[in-house]
Amino acid sequence: MKQFKVDFDSWSETKDKVEELERFNTVVHREYIKAGVQLSQSKMKMEDMTTGIDKLNMENERLTAALHAANSKSSRLAEDNRANIEIIHRLEDFEYKYHSVLLEIAKFREAAEDVERAKDEVAFLQRKANRTHEAATTLAVENDDLKKQLQRLREMKAYFFQRSLLPQESVLT
Image (tube, rainbow, N blue to C red):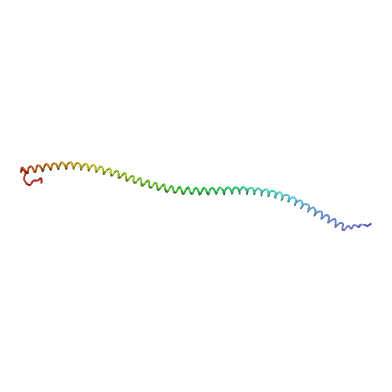
């Protein structure tokens, strides 16, 4: 059989190396545990981030839907705005026509006032014509009376001439 010879110098070195390896193993084990804890924390953070991303995606979908609704409403409002502008143009046209009608009404009122003034003037002229006619009738009657008187005077003159009561050159001639 073989005999083992123990070399105590090398045993002491080996023991130091084993102790060093054990210390290194303890450090590595602590680092391994820290890494495991960090990995667990990272997994939890990742899950939180995944949940946050999911929430952000849902919020993004909600905002996208709201944006589509706002765009749709904006389109409807633009159509309403175009319709309102068309109504405004029609109202402006109506207002222009209304003012034109008011001007025509003012012209008709002025013409009606002119007609009333003309009626008043015609009535005045009619009254004046009636007075003139009355005066003319009166003058005609007076003229007829004067003609009759003149005729009587002529007859009388002729009678007097015939009778020679008046001189030849009479005032009545």
